[in-house]
Image 1 (cartoon, helix red, strand yellow):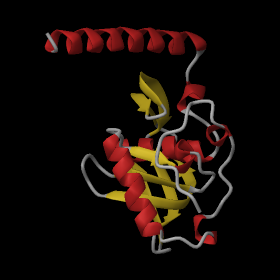
Image 2 (tube, rainbow, N blue to C red; image 1 turned 180 degrees about the horizontal axis):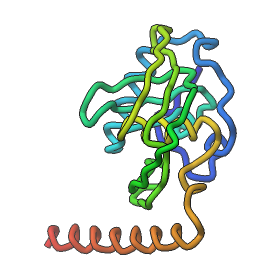
Image 3 (cartoon, helix red, strand yellow; image 1 turned 180 degrees about the vertical axis):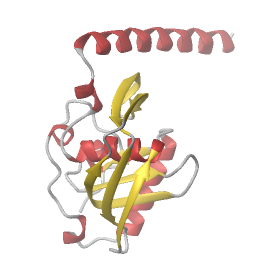
Image 4 (cartoon, rainbow, N blue to C red; image 1 turned 60 degrees about the horizontal axis):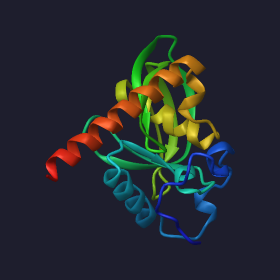
Length: 177
């Protein structure tokens, strides 16, 4: 199996199609693949990265737990329960650099998944961990966080991104004088 370790463009079919491949049906060393995805996630300054973001229709994502906690591969994830309580927070995505807007999600979720050595984990997540898990899980469903934004919210976020990019370019140009 070839492994593309670059982020795909936003229109790539893998981002808009439900991931349907059980990773353990493919004979590869998943601990190595997990490490490679974690490295890419860190190189891109992310806290999560799903296989569809690198063009793979595999039920796998990696994430960083609890603000600088352990990085882990999440294989064959499920969300078993959602809390009734929700919270809105600003969210971004490596597929859409510098595009941030408020997304409302359940504050707690009960999850089940496998680790790279095929062990099952079932637990409740809350806070940033619950948010990241839900965001990456949606990638496996063929859903991006853009679907949480109204057209107006998305237009505002895109204008903010354009302004940020212009400021970054101007700053960079001023440093190269």
